[in-house]
Image (cartoon, rainbow, N blue to C red; front, side, top):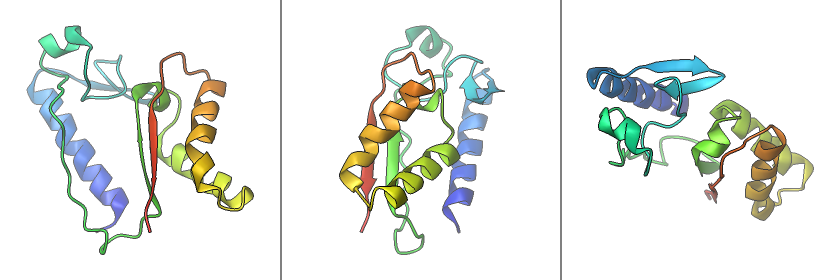
Length: 132
C-alpha cells in the first residue's frame, strides 16, 4: 500500500467522521472544515468544537516504514496548509534539497518563508523530520 493511498484512506475516514457529526468539507484551494478551517483536529477554535466537527483528539496512524519509501515527514499548522497543498509542500521540500546540496537543517525555515511569501496570514508551526 503506497503512502498516497494511506493518505486517501485517512482523509475519507475523517470526512465521514465530520459528516456524521453534521459538518461538511468544502474545497477552497485546500479542503476546509465548514468552509473555514483547513484542519479538522486542533486546539482552540471553540465555536467549531461546539458543533462537534472539530476535535482535539489525536488521530493516530501507524505506518510500517519498512513497507513504504519515505524521506521525511512534514507536520504543520493550518497557517502553512492554508496556502500549500501536501503535494506542493513535498515538491518544494524535494526541490530545495536538490538545489541546496541536501541542507536538511534548512528545509523547515525555507518552507515557512515560502508559506509567508504565498500570503499566509496565520501563525505557522512546522516540523520537518528526516527519516533514514
